[in-house]
Image (cartoon, rainbow, N blue to C red; front, side):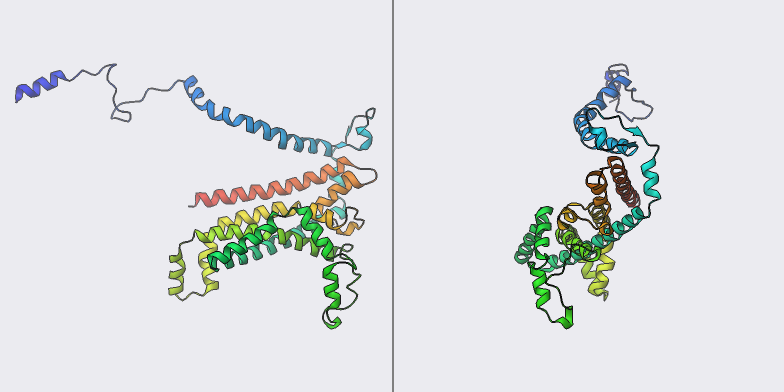
Length: 342
C-alpha cells in the first residue's frame, strides 16, 4: 500500500507551464488580459449599434441643434432668399422677449392647465375601463377591447375632423341634440353656437378629442398590469375585511405604481405637444390669440405670422423641448430610485 501511494505521488506531474490550475484557486492569480485584447472584445457590440446611433444622431440630434441655432439668430424669410443676408447673432434676444412677454406666460399657463386636464381625464378613464375589462367575461372583454383600440388607432386628423363635424354650427349633430333638449336644462341658441371661437368651448372639444383617442392605450396597459397581479393578494385583502376601493389603493396601486408613473410621463409628453387636433378643430386659420397653446404658438410665429419669424418660433420650440426633457429626466430618476430600493 505504501508502494502504491508513493508511485502515485511520483506519477503526479510537477507544477509548471503545462499545469492549468482552476481560476480563483488558492494563491493563484489569473493572468492579466492585455489592453488590446480587451478593446477587441468590447468593440463588436459598439460596432453593431454604431449605425443606429448615427441614424438617430442625424434624424433627431441634428434638427434639435438646427432649432437651437435658429433661436439664437435673427432668422426670417428674407434670409432664405438666394441673395439674402446671412442670419445674425441676436444675443439671446428671442429668449429675453419670451421671458418678458406676459402673453407668452399666459399661453404657457393655459398649455399646462389643458395638459394636466387631458392627462388626468385620460388616466382616470383609462384606469376605469381597464378595471372593467379585467372583470368582464373573456369574450365580452375582447370585444370591448377591440372597440376601444379602434379609437386609439384612428389617425389624429380623422378624429379631429369627426369632432369638428359633430360640433359644427347649424349642421353639427351635437348642436341639433342640444337645441332639441328643453331650454330649462341646457339653455337656448345651440343650433348656431360656434364651439371653435372662444377658448373655453374650444379647449373642451380639444380635451374630448385627445382623451377619446388616448384612454384606450391606458386601459390596455392597466389591463396588462392587472393580469400580472396574483389573485391571492385580493383574496387576502378580502379576508381582512377590505372593500373593493380599499383593495384598489392597498394592492393594485402599490404594485402598479411604476406602470402608472410610465403612463403619466408618456401622457404628459404626448399631450404637451398636441397640435394636429387644435389645428383641425380651428380650421387651420385660427384668429383668436387668447386660445393659443404653445404648439400652435410655435406654428403661428414660425409660419403663419406676417412676416414669419423662424427665430422666435424656434425659441418657443426650444422651451417646449426643455419642458419635455425635464419631465423625462425626472421620470428616469424616479425609475432608477425605485429600482435601487427593490
